Image (cartoon, protein in one colour):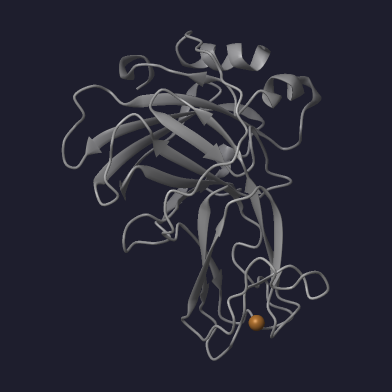
Length: 290
Ligand SMILES: [Cu+2]
């Protein structure tokens, strides 16, 4: 279990049991969490992108919201392809400019969809169902334990606070720290309503950028972190902490660390340990990690 030990050493030298888990993740609400936009000009066969992003990887249970931002164009979001089972899973019907449509993806798989009006407009959503249960958080991932950015250009993570009761409308502030091979590469604060934080990782060739949330009324939509720090073949450790519950600092630290391997291709040497789950789950105290 080379990877587990490595991840533990990176953090604090403390290795907790890594649980094997790959199962159906239930949606906890029907609130829209992740936005896909049809930008101006999306109708054009030569448009650079029809549905943006074109092929996100999201955890099972995520509710996706499509927006038609294409002026004076009617579009649809219709599951399948024109040839194969069009609309059998979801179908928006005609969407005018500024209309939205949402669908909750509960099952793992790759889901193609297209526009009935402009059938060259195609997109897909990749849904993963692997997760890791920590002491305080459950971490779900769109791509599973290995994020191969040559196959998936982005990966939506869902952090769910499981150890504390939180109302859906309660303000919660998450602090997320990403260590790359043991060195801090990113730190950010994310205020949300309720127990869930959706955070998408996007490896790019540019400097670090943070934006979101996709849905801000209420503030439950996904945030995004992109940058070249995510583009190395490296062992990443993601630390999650609740720094504010309502407007109070928690009496006891609420924190977990999770391992995630980000690779440009699937390396044979780490196949076995990575089949075990999302990586090493190392439960650690604030003093050790932060
Ligand atoms: Cu269309």
